[in-house]
Length: 190
Image (cartoon, rainbow, N blue to C red; front, side, top):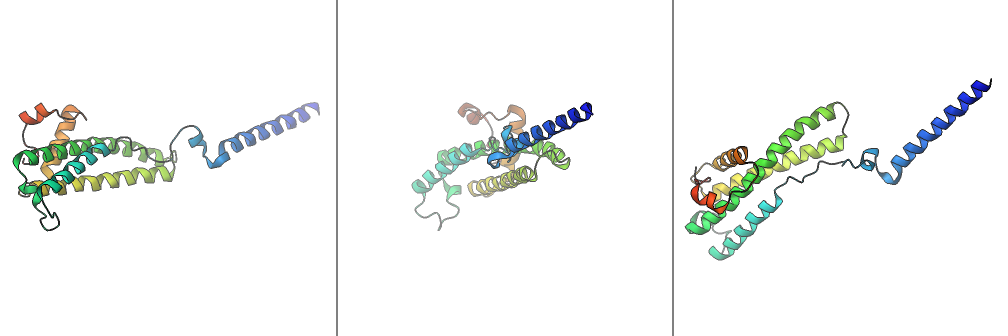
């Protein structure tokens, strides 16, 4: 009889302890994973936002300097002076290199996260944020190809993507120096 009472008391203590732990982990609307420091969305620390912004700033500066009305002249970038066009190509290549490095990372991450999602180890919200990051990067890649076709309309815009991927595979995500660019091939024109 005493053993049965001790068993019931132990069971009650365990139930109260588990309830307190669950209550603690779920307070303030945070999930248990968030309490442990696990994000509920895919982190985008790899996103090449600074490179995109640097290109867009240079483009805007050149737009105001070289064309009075870019709406009326959609081909203004292809008629830039050689030095200005080279600077724009350099920034576009930096952007493409950042995009290709991001593509490698997200492709590898997505394969791993798919395995985890299919086994119920990550939330649907997290998996959807991975898919959203893939979609956003795909749109960014299309934007780079569009920009490349505006700078060099007679060239295949896929060329810059191929060159950027070769660069990333060879050198990683390190940006080329001005000396590398001066001695290298014209990535947009190839």
